[in-house]
Image 1: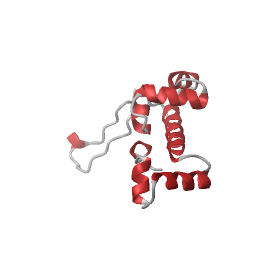
Image 2: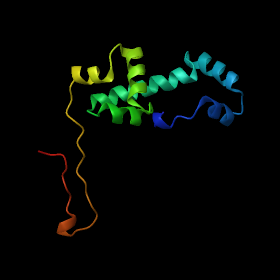
Image 3: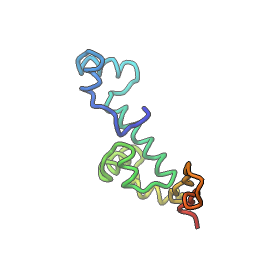
Length: 119
């Protein structure tokens, strides 16, 4: 799943597959061992963990991983790992996310690449 924040609801997946929600859920569970909803949550929680490991803040992590709010992320994180995202991030500190170099296609000196977030 390339964008867990954009995961469609199970009803939409069932519609696209031309089957009922119940039948899709049965097939999904038979093949992967988890319900579609649990699968999406697992993908989102792993994405959130990765974002926290890379230095993203809790609110950005919640938005980018598809949880929407930091409270929803916190509940899922506690369910899966037994700690809050803030505690996890503090326990395994990383450097804050820094914007990469920006390059431009223009050759004028005013449009030269700019390094941001560097000290």
